[in-house]
Amino acid sequence: MSNTVVERLIGALNRHDLDGVAECFGPDFSGEWPAHPGRDLVGPEQVRRNWERIFKLSPEITVAMTQAVEVGDEVWGEWYYTKAAGQDLKGVIVITVRDGLIRRSRFYMEPIDAVDAAVPGGPRLARD
Image (cartoon, rainbow, N blue to C red; front, top):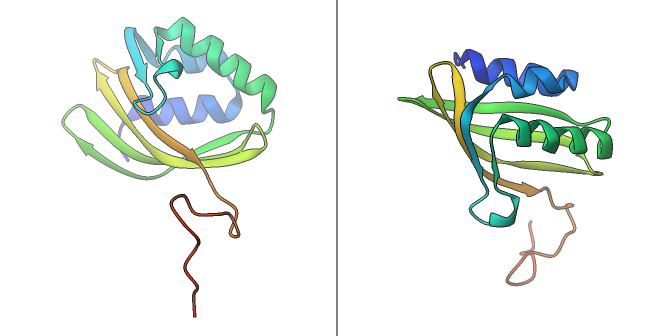
């Protein structure tokens, strides 16, 4: 991946550097969780407060972007959060970057099910 602000964000998150995290976001930033609208946030200060709480609840959390595609001003990334409040998360985050700052993000993250977890909508299919 070649997007420097996203790379800076990942580094700041893994160092638990709240100032470094907030510096990656523009003053007009909006963060959206389409499936969980109550989690939406606005502005770098709210991002900072959000991550401050996450770091307190999850002192061992790490983040990685395992795959990414850049199209215009958007970075579509597959993210992996480990030890986030006792669970691991995977999903896609779509980030819009303009003028070297993150202006928008849309989160599609979910907890990773245990291998023996029930499958929504019915039982797990047997594997040979």
